[in-house]
Length: 224
Image 1: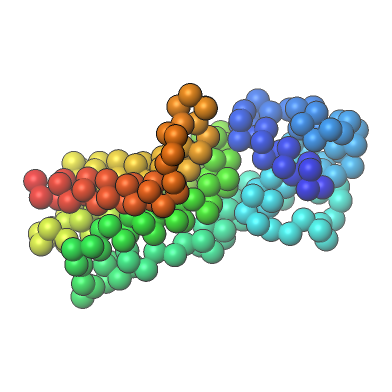
Image 2 (image 1 turned 90 degrees about the vertical axis):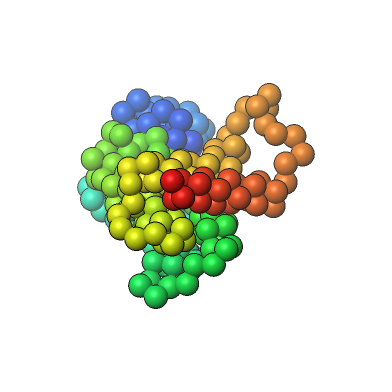
């Protein structure tokens, strides 16, 4: 079951849900297609299994063959995992009406974002690849998570600059770019091909450099 789940994660992350076939996962897992159907009833059930695994849910005790519970249920697993790994006290405190924003607040927000993305990177890779093909994941990933966090970060940056009002479109864009800076350093660089890897870069240095670039991007945009 673990091998099948890992094979499913690899295939769906690489090809998405539409292109991935049951035969692809069976081959990656080293089993026959017939054996695969002893564990899952369909490709959608296989995707649910991949999401369970990548979100840290126990696979033992599942009723086999695993049936497709529907994409809403699958998306709910990812949403629950997102809530579990969310540890963003600096942002939460800064968003409070009387929350204090000090010189290092944006930097710490960037560090905490790095830690969350790094921990949840396999789940995010899977959802990044599959969400354009699945409406439930597209809404959760793009609107409920990315857009909400983008706007929160823009508001905090404006507050850090001592300004009032609503963030401008330019500042919201800067917040989105800041998220991508941290996301690349925390997750995507780990999937780079060997020629593109940055030799000698430690995880500590990657985290700090990303957080500094994140804070600088928001600070500069909020000052304009």
